[in-house]
Length: 546
Image (cartoon, rainbow, N blue to C red; front, side):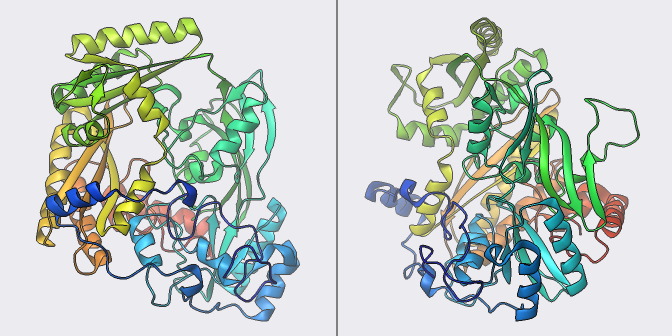
């Protein structure tokens, strides 16, 4: 299954360009770092973590279930996109067999036969996508759109339901800056453009998008739209859906080009049907986005608050007064403790507790300084202690690297996963306590102690998100262990006024809670839209819609 060799559409060797991330872990393997012996010792002492049994299989040792597509199916696909853009090779199927959640990676480490798409296709035009969808509807083949492969909620699981096979539709060839309107501040980017490539293309013209989720290095513009992504600069530039001015979408029922004006009263906004639709209604091929000039100045400052409640109140005051930080986030006491363990001193003095906050300000020199001073006054009045720029710069430098630590923890025998939610400010403390207790309780029931960390990373005038990281020892069958924990915390989130997801999306993992999220009538609406746009049910089955 060696990726460097080339082969035809069948066999085991790769015939297509491979996704940029390694098949069995997050990101670039060159950036992966094993845990030190000291950290392993702390995990063993505090959580009872012991080294995982056995070694991870190599790609050559992974057994995929054979492709269900016959030669006639493959020939029909090749007739649409060209034989050089279709493959049933194991080395092409394996890296597109799911996303990058902890369950995804645990499944990929199995030596049992694994599910994978039956073929991979790389269309190069909207006409080819329309023809592929028609062909797959006729032959009853499921289609899973694939961008960067960063889903952490089962959004890329190769589920076929009652269909005969499943196809991975890789959008990497939709990789251009199609248009830039410098006067209006809008750009049209292909769905396969990655975060770094988007910024590279725009910066050549003096603009940037400013969307920086943790998946930034690998995720794509189409994926950002399909999952309602929210970047770490959302306080300044908004969520990705707020940046979207238009969409082109190919569905089995036809192609839509949505978004005629900056605002409209011409009925419901149909763009909203596809933002967050996760590929179940259609294939997003291009997105028209609000962009802004590259900021001239960036100012960093970190803060300490005596406790999470005080810090959360400070963030609320900042957001409700509109003082304008580009980034503002707050770690709870446990997460701050872990961060402090990595740097002995912050701002020139020893910090022993409390909650760490990070702020960043961008714009012209005058704008950034004014926003900084207004925000600084609010944080001081709310009980914050300034710590200088270095901790905020350190956070920014490493902000895309946390998933590599997750992988190292899995290798060491720990169970590590993240989840997120959001609620109103008035309910924030209650929801945080309920989710933390559910995580700890479920892990205790599985026979292990746990470490639960939390931070606020996205703020709104009326509320905020909560992002949890949990670390525990793997016990028994870790997939079943995490499934039990996930059920418990998801039930607690829904029972305590949270949303089942703030920015990770629904996928297969959160689908069981969508009925509680949108109600019976809401589910009927989603099903009706699905029936109208995809009557054969070929698009990403088993995701989003209960």
